[in-house]
Image 1 (cartoon, helix red, strand yellow):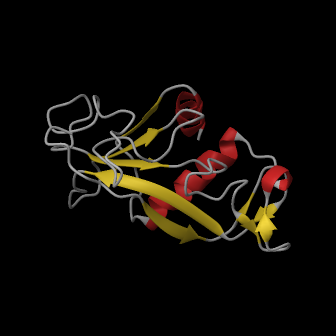
Image 2 (tube, rainbow, N blue to C red; image 1 turned 30 degrees about the vertical axis):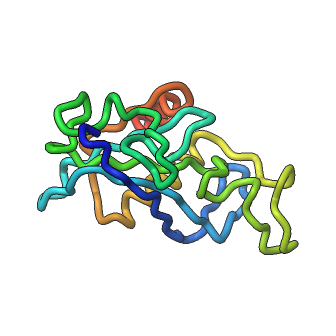
Image 3 (cartoon, rainbow, N blue to C red; image 1 turned 120 degrees about the vertical axis):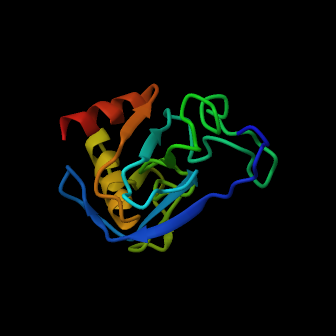
Amino acid sequence: MDRMVTVSTQSIQLEGIRLQSGIYLSPLIVAYETYGELNERKDNAVLVLHALSGDAHAAGLDADGRIGWWDGMIGPGKGIDTTKYFVICSNCLGGCKGTTGPTSVNPGTGKPYGRTFPQITIRDMVNVQVMLIGKLGISKLHSVIGGSMGGMQALEWACG
């Protein structure tokens, strides 16, 4: 972002989710960051999705002074202009950087899931994003964008 604004990752607890495998995963924590302002009509939201090794920190500086992985693209006057759009970037399900994943504690054992974390799909990731967007009070996104695994998620969004 132009002035290198410091942003902080937020997290929200959502209802559990029935994965495509049939396993019910709960509790469900989602880490996310937002940039810009949601307008009154709530129709200016853009969802940015990260690559396999990414996280929710897409723009600005985090508390450790780390620049977001897509800072050159997100901010005032940039490709995804935060003076026009409300940008949301969430850490994907299984991402281990604030969202429920293998490092999360399995409530059944009291220990991190590790290799016992359930198998997840791109559709499972998108279903969690749909839940997050709904919890933020947004019923329709202006657009969805991402590269690499984020691109696969964007395609899944397009499939409905």
